[in-house]
Image 1 (spheres, rainbow, N blue to C red):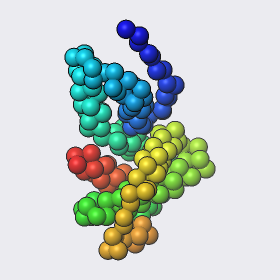
Image 2 (image 1 turned 180 degrees about the horizontal axis):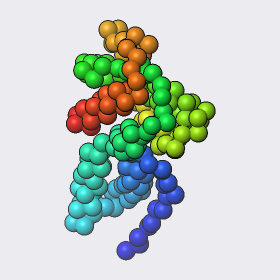
Image 3 (image 1 turned 135 degrees about the vertical axis):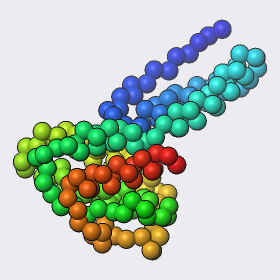
Length: 176
């Protein structure tokens, strides 16, 4: 029996994209050995395990890293900005525009941190980078309802209230 090994250099910093690496490795394995695998019992077991694993990995909330970084910055005393803060109770059809609004406003926090040399600049950068990466992956499937508000239509709130609302929205998104 010849065993072929596929080693991919998949390195992702603090993102949910690790599952893509695993799924791609499984894809390569199944694509190249699919018919050979189905000829014996061990092949069938591997096939069913591979079919199950991506579902398990996908169960992990893609916003978990963002949530961790939000917890890191929420007590920051050197960030003093007013930010458009989306409502946490928007309907399901407006969930993506709400997330986009929070990440757009995170860029304002990032700019403020770069100007003032905040102690939490790296955490803010991680939030912005990971959020935009996740939202870019969803761009092709996005359909925004006409009744959803633009970011600038929301009330401006201070940094603490913004972070509290952002955390609520992320937690709500992770439960779905």
